[in-house]
Amino acid sequence: MHRSGLKLNTYALGSVLKACCTNFMDSNQHGKALHTFSVKLGLDLDDVVATALLDMYAKTGDLVDAIQLFKLMSNQSVIIYNAMIAGFLQGETIRDEYVNEAFDLFSKMQKNGMKPSKFTFSSMLKACNAVEAFDYGKQIHAQICKRNLQSDEFIGSALIDLYFLSGSVEDGVKCFALTPKLDIVSWTSIISGYVQNRHFGCALALFYELLSSGRKPDEFIISSMLGACSNLASPRSGQQIQGYAIKTGIGKFTIIQNSQICMYAKSGDIDSAHLTFEEMDNPDVVSWSVMISSNAHHGCARKALRLFELMKGYGIAPNHITFLGVLTACSHGGLVKEGLRYFESMKKDNSMTVNVRHCACIVDLLGRAGKLVDAENFILNSGFEEDPVMWRALLSACRVYEDTVTGKRVAERVIDLDPQGSASYVLLYNIYNDAGINLPAAKIRELMNDRGVKKEPGLSWIEVGYKVHCFVVGDCSHPMSQVIYARLEQMMKRMEKLGYIEERPISSISEPKLNASTVMNYHSEKLAVTYGVLCLPASAPVRVMKNLRVCQDCHTMMKFLSRVEKREIILRDSIRFHHFREGTCSCGDYW
Image: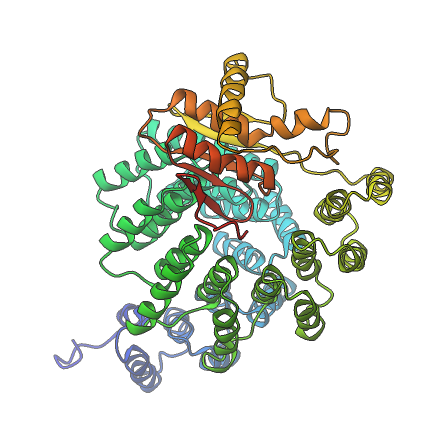
């Protein structure tokens, strides 16, 4: 057009500058050349061209020039302010100082008498969500209501995100209900919000409602739903959603395949997780990290480390999550030397700053190996000695090695740091109880009652026939309770003939009114596994999930049961997976 001698106008320049925002090779240099050209034509301060220039600099990562251009503009309109605010909020990771700049601009434009537009409010809500400035977001919501703009679908989606991120599920649902024009972004916001807040059943129900309305879910919704299925340990629902993704042509999206790996792994089917990974065309760092972590939690420590070395061989740089999986594998596999070597490599060879989760893995690694003194010294020199997670990891090791002296000291420290956390009280109670020291154990129970600290009740669940069946200790609410207890008694007698001896019954901190022997015999995982044995085909593995750590007696009982029933039992507790086959466990009794 230029070579033909035609005069370039503001709209032509604006369109070409918009093309430069797409970040193709040398797009910033093309944009700067067009900026020079617009100055020569005297069009650089025109609203359309100036806005396009500012947008170009911001979207190509040149915020310094964008800010300088903004300051040079004498006629700063709402459109110009919107472009500058949006510029500060570019990219997946938004820096705090840029968000503060966006807040300042929003305040300044109102002081100058300008009325924020729908786009302004949508951008500001995005800023609030990025830094979790929820109170500020609620103030912006109030302004939106005053201007009667809440019906806009972009604002509606941002408001849904705001309230779900803040944990206000009910308010998020209200915002969804008040949005008259629901697009796929609005549906994505509420479904992912439900998943983030662990309302997995609500997420599934809403997903099916979305399908029945005739709308087509995108890859982000499918990924969220697979995440919900993984947390529910509901592989059948996950397989249905996977099938839908394949039929609609989005099954090969990396984000979906990563969620699919996680869903299978968390449901106890590590083989299907491996198969999904092997079918991926271009696994990214998330794919590798998920596979490494999955193998770590399934007790396949050596396989996890081989995957890590293979990942590096392909030239994919590990991140913090990758190393967390590697350290977890070393901890669960008892690989002390390897774990310490990878921990040092993370800092020296990869220039990463370790966080409390990495350090907690090292405490767990040393503690499981019986190096309690080394673990305590590591905590004191880690920089995270005020974090209860570190001391709680050591406290668990004190119980395993029956060290009541160190356990008492460590428990006092962690209870002081987290007085409402029930896990520390329970661990110390069990340390005393295991050692037969009854008086201190009783005092811990009294202390919990005085402080109003309640232990989370044990819950186990199993999926049979597209339905999830839940059990608690001594549960009699299931329709098949009598059959379950009768079959459990039969199996107990058969196991006793093979040498199974039930552990010494001890009083329970959470069920003091129940008979100790009853509590031990009828732990929730025993009931769930028995139900699986009754209802599932003999060739099918029994997969049971539990919210708390499996006790020693149940772990021993599962080994005998896998031998008696000649079938695989997969138990996921709060720490890891246990694969019981022919009288042995994948953890090697090291958990």
